[in-house]
Image (cartoon, rainbow, N blue to C red; front, top):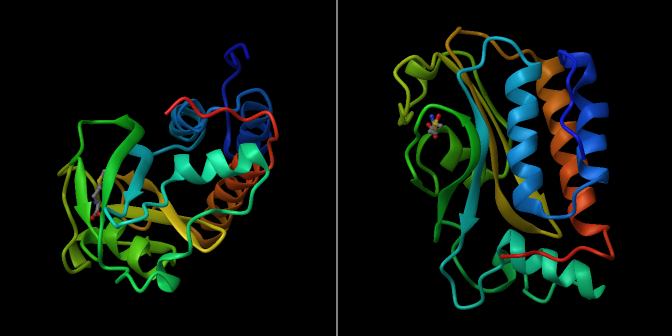
Length: 199
Ligand code: SME
């Protein structure tokens, strides 16, 4: 797909995301462009991107192995972590595609805003990161943060992380917008018969 040339606004976000996802089947490429899209469309961000869950368990269920199952039309071949007798506290988040300043590459489950979103599988909308116990300051300029977990077929795949230099930057409306974008991404990932992950 050719790159969008017009200035993007929050109102354009979902339609632009759908366009990107319709024209690219590789999850890595999609995450890279979704990061750029978010960073361009939403004002007052200093970081936008993905951390991917690496379980380091006996039967790792990564975004890419699950995407492979989607290619073959099979049901996910790896049981959800909760059914493997594996503690959800195992594994860690590893830096994925993003826009912004250099960031920490690994985040333990339950640590920081990202690790909390991953472990609890719930969106974390933090108005003031300095009041969040254990916040990990990759960029000292960050003042508020929104982290949305990527969960599909019972599996944690990673998180989408947005940082802003302004406190109280993220509204409930915008949280829902980004949650819809994540849902679009996951739907595209698992409903694409021709999908052929390169990783
Ligand atoms: N602040 C995050 C770390 C990731 S950076 O913001 C890119 C956290 O507390 O988990």
